Image (cartoon, rainbow over all chains, first blue to last red; front, side):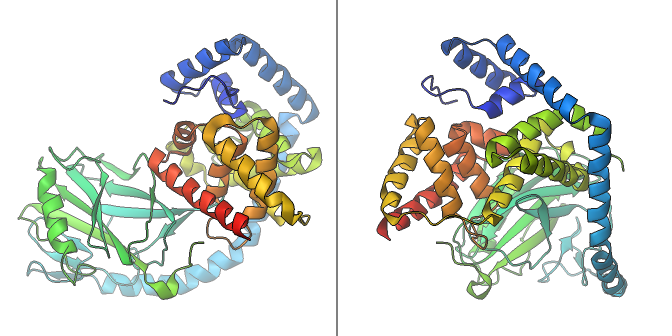
Length: 279
Length: 168
């Protein structure tokens, strides 16, 4: 942690200290910096408590919470017609997508959305309709007040901040990595490239601890979740990713993994026509 | 509605309002923005699974308020002030910023990021946290759940914008 006693402790951190939500290391650092300023955590807590009382007297909880709920309901009602239209359009698409799910026995056929442990290829068309029991990969683009979920093929551009998550109801072991149009392999989880793959949380969706900013690599960024039921070497996935990244067909082809592995990918389209130029 | 709005407001509402008052400098606008922050929380309460509400609410409050500031009519600034403002922001970025330079940094941030700027949204709030709140890169990264290198990278782009301003 950067040590800097010359600057006042930011209000942001004081608020979080008063809430008791800072991690132990940061809280200790804030206390040390307060002491250097001749202040104490108790003084800060008293100031915050006094301000809280004053604000809650001006804006009592019950009526304010009721006003917030009314505002939320109005916002939801305003958004409802658009959602309904979206559902009407998406329902037949989803049905068509279910019908289009194809299991192909021959391994390494291109454009699989998911590969099972026997190398079978599952192709899903028409949207996000992978069976819930299969491992999944999720991408969200951070926005000002909300995150936008990105589907396979979504447009993205340099500077986009994306949050990666995975779903693995069956647990197991896995890594998350990506390849890009510059033939580079990036590890997202874990960050190391050696050792064994960590255990996956047996949950519907688990977000990685930090987000990832897309760089200026051209054409695409394709994210993979590589999973197996038993521990495996991270190098197995990394080597397969490096081999694929070097191929002209890297955007579509599957990773060449040994039997026993599952893989699922999600690609972002970074073609120049769709990109907003960063200044 | 699953989220207990009243209990969240009791615990976090005053903090959010203080944040909005600091950014907007207008009690009525701050109160309005504070309600919008909680509306956003209701809509995206799933994010509470992953992190402490305090940091999330402070970030949302920052974004909501910066969006409002952006939407307000901006006063034209004197061209000759740009060099001085850029210099002061650079000083703040080096960690030696005083209250005055942070105030100036705050004014130039509004000028730097327009409504259609691809750097808008999260980068603005990161820049604000670092340049105006005076948080270190490590603190900004931790409170935003980003890597330090990711924050540094985004702020490098901000410096690039400042350099462009100096060239204008």
